Image (tube, rainbow, N blue to C red):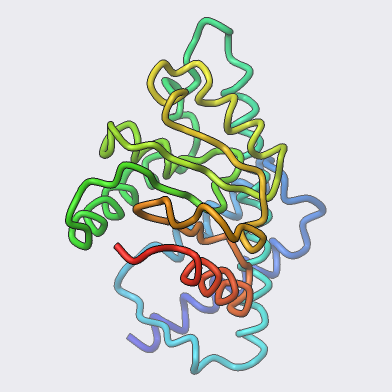
Length: 227
């Protein structure tokens, strides 16, 4: 097992070396290939790597790689949200979500999230807040379409352009256009209204380091009610 873990770490370091030298992280054949290889390397569940035992150099590399992944994911979502939103006016962009390369992953992850939610709530939530929804709010969309058909989703993002793209995605859907609401704000500045939601989701990319994530979680904890 240790040998396998070391091999995986080496593969990730090699990919990081290539990714960190890219001139741009916007979607391209080279970018897509490298991040596809990174996803394939990290997905297997038979590895159990203890991050705390890594060298400081590898820990720094890991932190930098997380930031690069976040930036690349933002570009990827922006790219596909723009494509979907520009489809013919009489079409529904949500009917074509399968063109997004990781859509199947979102279907699986959202099912897991819904199952966890069901285990820890006593009633079906009527209002959900999603913090850090981005230009392509797939978690909100999938949960709303397939698992929570009567729930209203309030999506928060600090980027107004991301919200414009996301709003365009759902604007032609007769159902979700009524149940998906977008707010442009930094959640750390939101002190009122968070207690109106039954559930608050925090996107993985909110706070790109541990300290920032802790600040966001502590702020949410202070201003939301306990279910």
